[in-house]
Amino acid sequence: MRTTRQLRTARVTVTTETRGRCLPTVLPTVTENLEGEPPMTPLVQLKSATKRFPNGRGGLHTAIRDVDLDVGAGQFVAVVGPTGCGKSTTLSLISGLQPASAGTVTVGGEPVRGIPEGVGYMFQSDAMLPWRSVLANVAAGPQWRGVAKDEARRRARDWIARVGLEGFENYYMHQLSGGMRKRVALAQTLVNEPRILLMDEPFSALDVQTRALMQQELLRLWAGSGAAVVFVTHDLEEAIVLADRVVVMTASPARVKASYQVHLERPRDVEELRTTTAFIDIYREIWKSLSSEVDLARKGQIRVA
Ligand SMILES: Nc1ncnc2c1ncn2[C@@H]1O[C@H](COP(=O)(O)OP(=O)(O)O)[C@@H](O)[C@H]1O
Ligand SMILES: [Mg+2]
Image 1 (tube, helix red, strand yellow):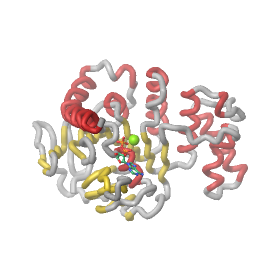
Image 2 (cartoon, helix red, strand yellow; image 1 turned 90 degrees about the horizontal axis):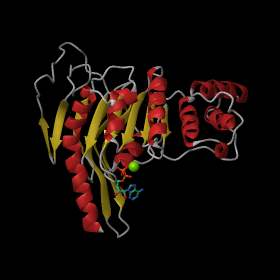
Image 3 (cartoon, helix red, strand yellow; image 1 turned 30 degrees about the vertical axis):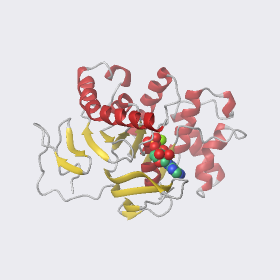
């Protein structure tokens, strides 16, 4: 098993998988075993995870097949792949919302059965109840977990301030902009102090400027949290500016095609970073792998259409 502690990696591929075969890729500055380091169990681990759904015609549709993925504590991993390849399905297995059809999924070394403790989930759509204030929405999570109302509201106020919404505690969803709603969603998730944060294209409905702002905010909030993040996106730029590692998935059914370490210094300025040579080099490298999957997915759509 490879772990981040066993390998010292440069900013390129650790392993590359072609369809059906895993080829260990030793690139010029890639790997160096750190002997004597005990192997660590990753916080999140998928081993040959496969998910099949009924296809509505009496058969089964394979959404993901033999997915292997390790995420260490505190690590920020972005998962990219063409639309419809199985990214959300992968997250649903980690969150326990869906059981795997084959293979294993563990969180903290334990097989996932139901929603594991300490997992936070953030989707593209808001999870705010429109008839409740910002404060009541953010306090709802801790209250549901058994925290007394006053304490839940104290924690909620603290997080509302941390996401930059002090003074908006009594507002309702329809009174907030798209960016502000995302801030509420972040507070709603982070108030529960998750050790694993699962994010499914959370910013993809935002305009470009608001999206960059929210990416920056996410990095700021994550930096102090110690949480591991699995961030799904179809936007490679977003994946690189945010993550320690970018995992490329194949066209449907998704498998892990390749995994790239992103050695860009932190703290990061997401807008400035995009213009740097280091960023552009990494982008080109990963895009080589991703673009063929995007092409395959598009051809598949044309065949179906
Ligand atoms: N609950 C479900 N029932 C049936 N098919 C599903 C279900 N969820 C996802 N799928 C199918 O699995 C495939 C992967 O979907 P998804 O994981 O949502 O892709 P992505 O998030 O990469 O766009 C798609 O073909 C989708 O239609
Ligand atoms: Mg999806």
